[in-house]
Amino acid sequence: DADVTQTPRNRITKTGKRIMLECSQTKGHDRMYWYRQDPGLGLRLIYYSFDVKDINKGEISDGYSVSRQAQAKFSLSLESAIPNQTALYFCATSDAGTFSYTFGSGTRLTVV
Amino acid sequence: DQQVKQNSPSLSVQEGRISILNCDYTNSMFDYFLWYKKYPAEGPTFLISISSIKDKNEDGRFTVFLNKSAKHLSLHIVPSQPGDSAVYFCAASDFPGGSYIPTFGRGTSLIVHP
Image (cartoon, rainbow over all chains, first blue to last red; front, side, top):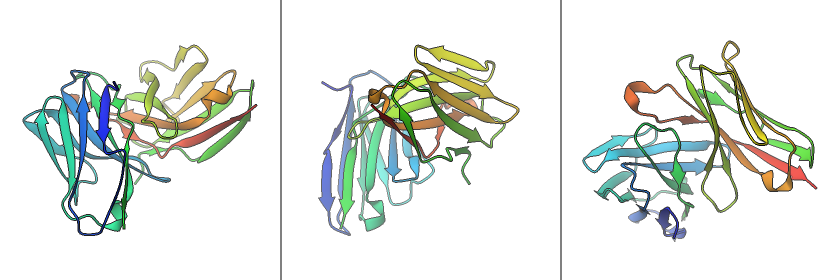
């Protein structure tokens, strides 16, 4: 099994719908992150969590919310999806005191 | 404004030759730099890093060079192999309060031709 598992891998949803992307990890890391990748724009941080009770906004948090259900689970929600949220979404984990992240394989989200 | 810039969206190299991927940064507080590699349909994977106290770090075929005065780093791959074809992301961090959260560049797509 992958260290960081993202579900679903692909999703097409309609404008205005609520959608949740899920991430679970078996690394035992305290820190978890959600990134978004758009063509030509690299990886941009949406939200991050340093432990179960800690949630922080990243550079592009508007339109998104997160929930850290357990050390191993961190979900990203789009309350009312819009087409410009069409992107590749990555979950990542890391240990405290390290710059090395472990990324999931990504969720490709299309909002029509 | 981009703090980490990868000005070449793509690079094409012949197998066996050297690949040089470049990265510039604007934040003089950045003190730790990383390269990640990403294959299609996979997440990025950590490749190599360098602290600002060094100017070179080597790991097998991969070497990262840091020029602090120029705020520039580069990744050298020698010799390049077709399996190195991927998108390479440069990242940098200024370690504020122990956050260890890097800022990523936009990536350079490397194609190594057989």
